[in-house]
Length: 134
Image (tube, rainbow, N blue to C red; front, side, top):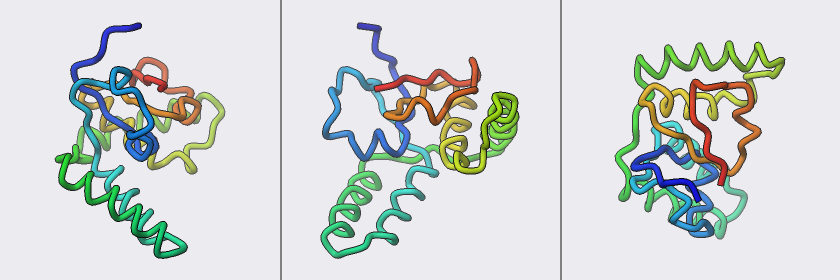
């Protein structure tokens, strides 16, 4: 097994599935981004019924308490443009991946690995971000 990273960014699907994952496969210090927080808020707003809304609200509440989200700042915005260009060069459409690419840009601009359950979402980024599939 590879050595655990000291810190790393969890993408939204990884955070949602956190209770299902082996903690030894995760960074010692997990980080969330403001983009993931926005996606969690969106999930609450889009819940189809009270039971789903309650579960999503609980997950969002835990994230708010447990994490100080990394912002999408100027450095991340600049890196985002680079990542979009790489996705286009790989003949992929960046539009459906905007949120994923914003999360990746935050991780990349801070030289942090990105932990995901969906490695394919990050195809084409080369060495601009270390993607850790779990």
